[in-house]
Length: 149
Image (spheres, one colour):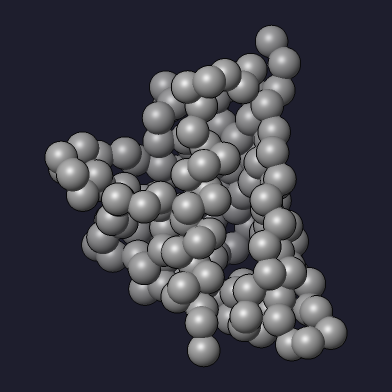
């Protein structure tokens, strides 16, 4: 079995500190966490923003109410430049063997914006059914809208 991975690079029209905080603040996560057509209610988000701290969230399909839980543990937090955490794919089987590792790296740009590199490394092959890259891409589109000045 081989690993699957992908990287998404985005530039946000916001200072790095604000982008970093959007990853750790449940009030902000409820505005953007999840792909289009999904909601993540504030009362279904727990974030313990320290190394070894956990997060839990529940995405809910706006179309049919299906729920998709996700959980993980923060491995590294270097404000405001880097987050590393495990991610339990909401469509996975819930085992440790199916956990991904996400690395978010933030850098200031010369024009006051923030460049973000989002890297996901997951066990198992990438197949046509996998929607993690598309889902995260859509979530980051939502984040860009939330961060607009």
